[in-house]
Length: 212
Image (cartoon, rainbow, N blue to C red; front, side, top):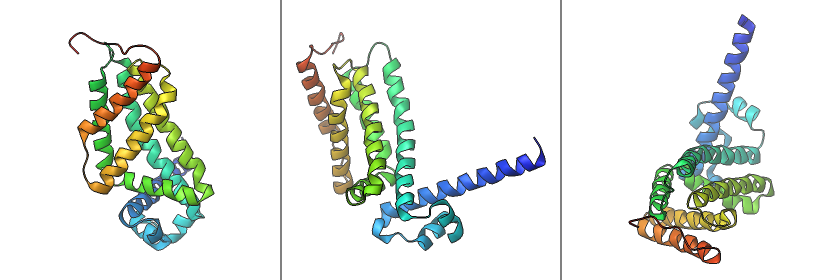
C-alpha cells in the first residue's frame, strides 16, 4: 500500500466516523427533545463536528432523518438477527415460552436505549413527510422478516403472513412502555401466545414437547 493510499483510507475512515457520530447525535437529540428542537448547530455541537462537515454529509434535514432512521434499524436488525438465527438453529425447536423469553429480553435491551423513542418520532414524521416514508417502510419490513424467522422457529404455518401481527403487537406494547414507563412481561407472553395459537388454529395443532 502506498502512502497516498494509506492517507485515502484514513480520510475515508474519518469521514465515516463523523457521519455516524452525526446520525447518533441526531437520534439522541430527537429522543430527548423531539424533531422540532433539531438545528444544525445543536447537531454539530453534539456530534463534535463543524457545521460544514454536517452539511457536507447531509445537505437537507430530510436526508439526515432518513439516514438516522435507517442506521438505527440496521443496528437493531443486526442485534435481533443474531437472536433469530439462534432460535432457528436450536434443537430441539424452542417452545413458545422460550421464544417469548427471548423476545422480552430483546425488547428490554432495546428500550433501555434512547433510540427507540427517536424511532417512534421518525415513524410519525414519515406520516407527514413523504420523503421519509420509504425508510419507514423498510424498517417495518425488516422487523417483519425477523418476526417471521421467530415464528418459523416455532414451526408456525404461514409464518410470513402472521409476522406483521407480531410486529404490530411489539410496536404497540413498546409504545405503551415508553409512555407509561412500565412493561408487563406476562401480557407480552400472553399476547404472543394468542397470535401463535390463532395461526395454528388456521393450519395444524401446535407441536408440543414432552413436559410442556
